[in-house]
Image 1 (spheres, rainbow, N blue to C red):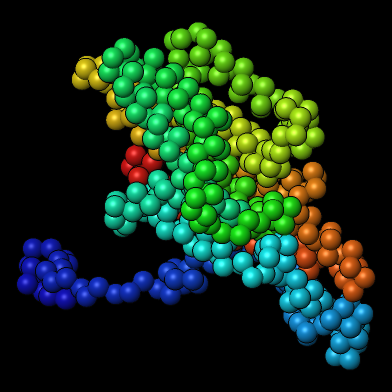
Image 2: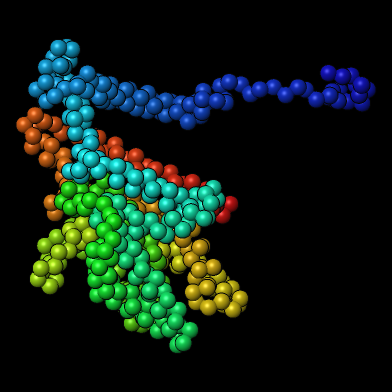
Length: 438
C-alpha cells in the first residue's frame, strides 16, 4: 500500500497486487463437485443416494464379472471352481468365451484360411483411411479405395481372380459407353447407354469371358461357401457393405425425390415410402425364401448376397430421408448462388449444395449407420449364424447349456466397441467441419 496520494483521497492504490490462485473449493474437481453435485441440500441428498445405489449395483456386477473360471471346460466345471473358491456359485463362467471366441469371430470359416478375412479387414482400414482422414492420409490411396470393393469379396469368398476383374471391367465398359454416347447425343442418353452396356457385360458376357480365362490361366483362392460365414465376420461384412452402398444410393434417392422430372420423382418417392413401410425382417424373409421363386429354375443366388441387397436397400431409404432433411435445411440463396455462377445441375450439387447438406446431416447419417450395423443381428432369424445365432448353437452344446449372460455380454461388448467408435468419429468430424457454425 502506498500513501503517495493520501493528501487528496483517503486511499488510492498505485501498485497492482500479485495475482493469487482461486480458492481450492471453487476450482478443480472439488469446485466442480461443489457446483454440480452439492450446490443445494436437495442436490447433495440426491447425489449421496445415487452414489450409494451405483456402488450397490457395481458391487454386484464386479463380484460376478471377476471370476476365476477362465480355464473352465464346462458349466459344471465352472461351478466346481467357484465352489472351491468359496463363491457359492456366484460368478461368471468365462471358460465358454476362452473356448468359443474364435467361433464367435469367424463362425465356421476354415481355420487354415483365417488369414484371408483378417487381411480383408486390415485392408478395409487402409481403404477407408483416405475417406475418413483425408487431411492426414495421402490422396493417392484413393486408387486403392476404388479397387477395394473388388478385392474384399474375392478375399472372403475366394475363387478365380478373373471374376472381380470382370466385375470391374463392367464399370469401365459402362463409363466408356456413357462418354461416347454423351459426346454424340446427351448426358441422359449417355447414362442409359452406360447402364445398359454394363448390364449386358455383367449378365451375359462376363461369365463366358471369365470362364474362358480361368480355363487358360487358373489363378485364385480356394472357394469358401457362404454357409460357413458367421460370427462378427458376417455382421461386419453385412454392415460395411450396407453402409458403403447405402450412402450414394441415399444421395441419388434424395435428389430424385426433389427432382422436377415427375417419373423420376414418383419412382423415388414410391421406393422410399414402400421400403420405410415394411419391416426389415419381412425383407429378409423375402430374400431368404420368396426371391428364388421369381428367378429362373436352377438359379443359385447366394443367400448372403441376397441379404446384402435387402439390407442395403432398406438402409438407403432411410439415408435418403436423412439427406433430404439436410437439403431442405439449406437456404434458397445457396441454389441461387450456384445458378448465378453458371453451374449446371450436377456441378451445383457436387460443388455447392451436397457438401453443405452432407455436413448438416452428419449426426443423422451416423445414427443410420449405427442402426444398420446393429440390425445385422436380425439375419439370425433366417438361419444365418451371426453372433446371436452362434450363441444359440453354443448353448446347445451340453457343456455350455445354461450359459446366457457371458455370451450376450461378450457380444454386447463387441457391438459397443464398433458403435461407440462410429459415434466418436462422428463427433470428431463435426468438430473438424464446425457444423455448429460458431
